Image 1 (cartoon, each protein chain N blue to C red):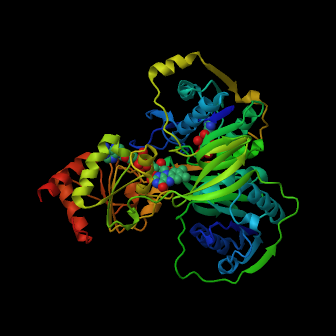
Image 2: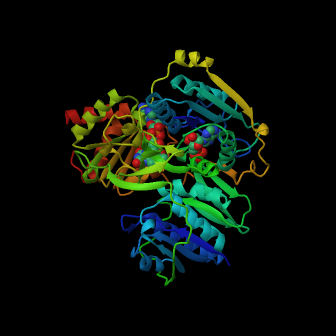
Image 3: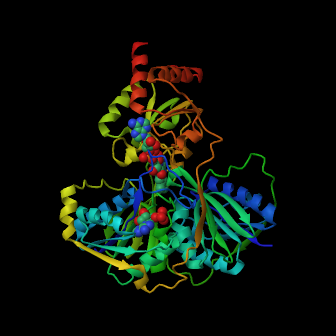
Amino acid sequence: MNIIVCIKRVPLTQEVDLEVDELKKGVKKDALAYVINDWDNYAVEEAVLLQEKFGGTVTAITIGDEDDEEILRRALAMGADKSIRIEPGERELDGFVISKILAKTIRDLEYDLILTGVQADDDNAAMVGTMLAEELGLSHAAVVTGMEPEGSDAIIRVELEGGMDEVSKIKLPSLLTIQTGINEPRYVSIMGIRKARKKELVVINVEDLGLSEDDLAQRTMIEEVFLPPETEGAEMIEGDPSSVASQIIQIIKEKGVSI
Amino acid sequence: MGEIFVVVEHRKGEIREITFEMLFKARELCQTSSHNLTAILLGGKNSGFVDDLAKWADRVIAFEDNRLEIFNADLYKEILDRLIREHTPFLTLMGHTSWGMDLAPALSIRTGLPLATDCVDIQTEDGRPMVFRQIYSGKLFSKVSFKESPGYLITVRPGAFLPPDDVEESQGKVVRQELPAGLTEPKKEFIEFVDTGAGDIDIAQAELLVSIGRGVGEEENIATIRELADLMGATLSCSRPVVDKNWLPKFHQVGTSGKSVKPKVYLAFGISGAFQHVAGITGAGTVIAINKDRKAPIFRVADYGIADDLFKIADSLKEKLGNG
Ligand SMILES: Cc1cc2nc3c(=O)[nH]c(=O)nc-3n(C[C@H](O)[C@H](O)[C@H](O)COP(=O)(O)OP(=O)(O)OC[C@H]3O[C@@H](n4cnc5c(N)ncnc54)[C@H](O)[C@@H]3O)c2cc1C
Ligand SMILES: Nc1ncnc2c1ncn2[C@@H]1O[C@H](COP(=O)(O)O)[C@@H](O)[C@H]1O
């Protein structure tokens, strides 16, 4: 089974004070630490697990700059065989353009399965996966929590809202967007990443793919990025942990819960 | 005058809430820019949905066929593509749900119409839509415009537009249509639904929930919060990453893909407040959030906030309750 997995490097933003950049089109990125998108980490693991079971190759692909090669090496260290980075240059990319670039790159490769994450942790769009599937004319499913090949099909599990999964049978080749929790991604050591330097990493320039200007034109444009309005919000309880704890206990009791 | 399409979402014989949320927002947009509101139903034979939908829309276009009873992106996108080409609606709204994530991006490529996902507000400026969305899990907002096009696709965040109880009823015209001939054989075939939420305890019944998120850091640390929950007589619940890492079983998970809870008090320890989590606590009486990031989105929905290390607060709580 030959598998392609699309991955993205994203900034860690949870415990960081994000600042909007001068053009108000994004965040100031200099001080941020980057990691592989959490959903994509599960997708790489799923690809490697399937390859270990059924053979074939795993190819990891990212559209990004040189720094983003870090996640390709990480994927190689997890067990991917080959990797491709597409250099976008200064172009602005929305999900549409990304899916066009990925489709053009993947079209001539051999594959039975393409995996993406459900969503990227930066834009939270959940869009690239099934756009790419449609570009390539593949069967697809979003928010997948299980996958088992069965001849020329696969039995898949899709997560619905409210604690419900849907099991179905899908024809291969297929594109699945992978949900967190589908597996337990393996640990990657620095040594492992160093060793993976021997594996293939091909760099392609987006201008060499032969896409038209229309394909490379964004369909949605960020006009402005801004911090959430501070109007509404929680009443903050300040003070040392002991006094905060007393206040929490008091609130709980006031709300009619006996503790 | 144009049209706004709302794609009706349903499951197991019920229309999903997101449908009414979209119809409500679409009605507001129709009023400001004099469009017509059309609900598009792709459902099973005699779904029984049509009358309900007619109260919310100017028109219901209904395809009722047993092949459509359970959502199937292959069939749905083909039918919607044809319908959109025929009517050229100004906007087509779908839910930012499991369905919508499968369907909308594929439909965007098929129709050639631009798509913006997970929108929390929709406006129009100079005859073009302008949408608002959240990025970085709600830490920032963005305003997004579209490339000019005959129509636009938008997926709507569940819970973003809550209709009031007294929505004025309309008497929409119902147009029943047969499935077009020559549909492509779907590449996906439904097998069954599986309930994943059941377990030893039902967090939906708890009066007091002590809930932990990724901020708890390590599996070993769960024990100290469990002790706190026991001391308080509270039930332990969690956000998704805690379940993903197998630190707690799935039936502890709060959120869109877990459970909706309605405790009198919900204590959130180290949970950032992504919408998929927060959607599960709208029924909570009082939310108290403890997070060391003062800018965490959870503080926008909590009643009380503590910007501090969760373990410090948990230890102090334990000390007080242990001695008291
Ligand atoms: C289709 C879909 C369905 C989903 N369904 C659900 C769902 O049902 N439920 C759900 O919860 N999520 C769900 N998610 C995931 C959701 O988008 C978020 O990724 C998730 O809720 C984040 O969990 P978290 O807040 O625990 O982790 P994070 O976002 O990583 O936040 C951790 C927080 O802990 C804080 N922190 C760290 N250390 C400490 C400390 N020592 N003291 C205090 N605070 C600390 C950090 O500041 C941060 O705010 C779903 C996602 C998708 C795409
Ligand atoms: N720049 C990129 N390079 C490769 N894959 C990407 C890129 N951006 C998004 N993806 C894939 O598409 C998925 C969904 O991203 P998004 O639609 O941006 O939320 C991600 O989880 C990745 O698998």
